[in-house]
Image 1 (tube, rainbow, N blue to C red):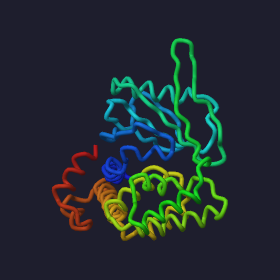
Image 2 (image 1 turned 45 degrees about the vertical axis):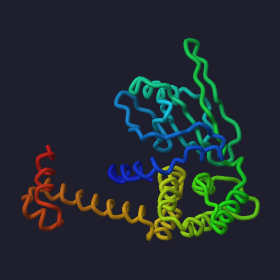
Image 3 (image 1 turned 90 degrees about the vertical axis):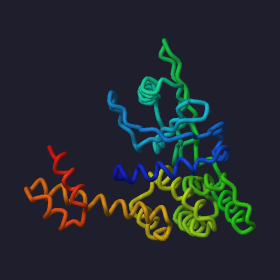
Image 4 (image 1 turned 180 degrees about the vertical axis):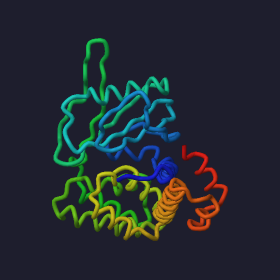
Length: 268
């Protein structure tokens, strides 16, 4: 799911509040107290990744690195390179969790290169009972017992194991449950987790359904507005590149003239 930079910033802001203190324990991940999100771009290293990773700062001053994998990682050299660069950039210890999606139940967790020993934590989402997770979340909504852990259950439920329903049925059920979360802030947090984390692996059809079904959600509306604004800015840049003057571009796009002027200055 490719997103404009400003949209990523919006998601990062909501993700910071979405991470519950102990909520990740439902996935077997403990001691994650998030302080802030961190940039993932590293100038000095190029690493092929399936999906953009998530890098967070924890209350322990440690860097927390989350990455999703739909294929079994045969070795950990790629992760070692990336984490070494993270450690160099932030001068902190790094903790890496790899979330495996699909029919993957084992993968290497340690790498010994002689001069250093490297390890990660592997979480296999298919090992979790999706039917039970959704039943728990629905029950908590009905009884008013919603907890921060329910955000995690719902956000990652799509990638869990199902015996009583298909993946498509589970996806539709997840959308329905998300819309029924009574507290708008909790709903925003849950949507942020879906869009910013587990939703990175959705198909185009599922992405469209997600946006359509949750279009009244505050966060989704904010992202849609920002995406439209980014499209208008792209048009403005193209018009300026073709030689149109600032006043004309501002009139055509509706953007403030000073913003268009700044775009013109930054063209070259």
